[in-house]
Image 1 (cartoon, rainbow, N blue to C red):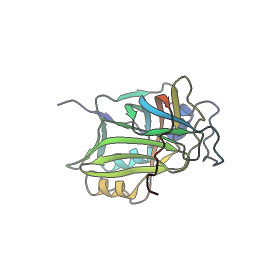
Image 2: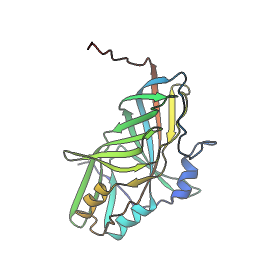
Image 3: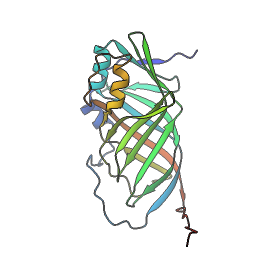
Length: 221
């Protein structure tokens, strides 16, 4: 059985935000407008750098639980800030739209993470990461046969086009969903609060291929 890495560092989100945000990128909700030259892309492979929120990590620690990541993930620590960042390989999940009304990009990973404590384990597979202009950004996963949002965040302005075949986007802060809180409280973290807590933020870097918009013709009438 492969050994999982346990994340024990409590991450300060203010330092993480400075570390992850590209220079000159505003951390504000997107302004919707009239689209011009909407661009479409097919997501290929990439990496998500996920900084787990200090509030969430503290609740796990206080409840006697640990967060474990798959062997494919890489955990690094920034020498200046002491911030830990979990890097996870991802692949494209759906068509990416930029410079339009429904801008959004997402990716999925085969990496599984677990929360273990108090004789119970919650395993989360099929991790998904979404940054969007017209709807909520989110982190999702599957727990057994059930799909759930681990947390959601605000809308976020995306770049207008890919740069050298790559799109990079940093999410807003993601807060936990009530369903995720309930799942943890019923198992490994009995002291988990029912209120939304800071789950962190992530930076998604995806290699893409430009494509033409797929038009579905209506054959009725």
